Length: 504
Image 1 (cartoon, rainbow, N blue to C red):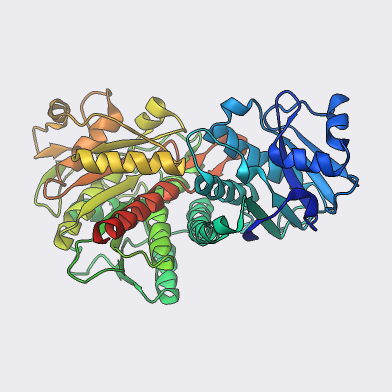
Image 2: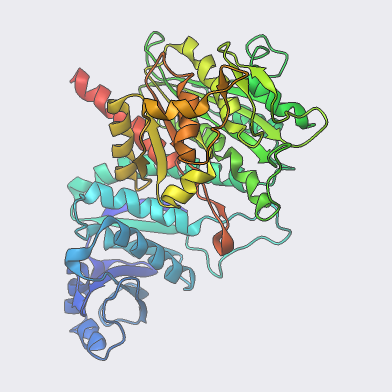
């Protein structure tokens, strides 16, 4: 779909459909008032009959509105004007697209972008309208014999701005959001693919293909016998129960001077997790194909950075493998030696994400990073604590933590900070190794997982995003969400803007 930004008045739009808002109770938005005036009070008279009262998400499609050149007019209920928040705004855009897909419209000109959303400006409105639109039109049918398609394909979506001086800013936002949307869709596609297709090798191949297409992005993939990873005893131990060879993916984007410290993203790339010898319950095990969503998010974010030519150095690291039961698989009680030299007692083979991440986090020390963020579907405990609305965030640096929280708020891909206090570390003591991979108790599971990783991140500023509750949805909406790609993209865009300001 093509996204555009333009200025103009609603009654003069020669298009398939004009979209305007109506507030409770039956109060016309500014754009709707202009249509009403042009049509001789047609909209106001219609609303008096009770067809739509302006409640959030209501829609009413009109044809042949007098003295309006558009083929159709779509009225969208916006709720109470003073209560138009970011959450309501995104809902309006989703409802708009659902309604448009049921029409014959091939183009829509949407004036909802000019609404006043509490605490946000026009640029934010455009950005989030486009992201919501992308979410509404996303379809995954790669593994279906018959492809899903809407009855009529909306080919062009135009957002309006008050005047011509805002068009240039809007066009820059469209360019930015298009790259982010492509990254989100890539992450969703990778997450939605089944484990028999999206293997560690497949994940590595996709990263290589992106590197071939984007010359500023260098991709290296290391096998188990490569000198860089053959001492990763924790990472390699997880792969022993699978016939799929592990892959260690390193993506390097250079958008700044070679000697400038990079931002490093580390993503858990577990393409299927049966739990190993500590076998998971069968109910919902199919969803363990989503256990690589952290890795998918990193690959997608590196694509975004290169596409937008951000003036930063960014490195993405994805340790990829499967966790399956086998005669050679890790057993509870086994002790392995990490790349950092710390020995780890494996009390639960289903706590494998931290085993592959700890070696990756040690590996990235060589880059002397400005900051490191790891992204992982790490713990079911985080789902219990925060549900599907926020990713768990833990960090050893307050400034980094605040930057990520701000990026989450601005992108609508929110995170919530959990404590990483020293007292929690007591739970990881082992009688037989330097550290246990899980605590002996069940309390604070998400925090304990981060405490384990913190042992390997003392040489740099680090944050951990637990996306177990946000990376995918279950039930009738089952599928990857693409999170936290919006948050990560916003974080890097903010760093690029900060860098530009410091040079000014």
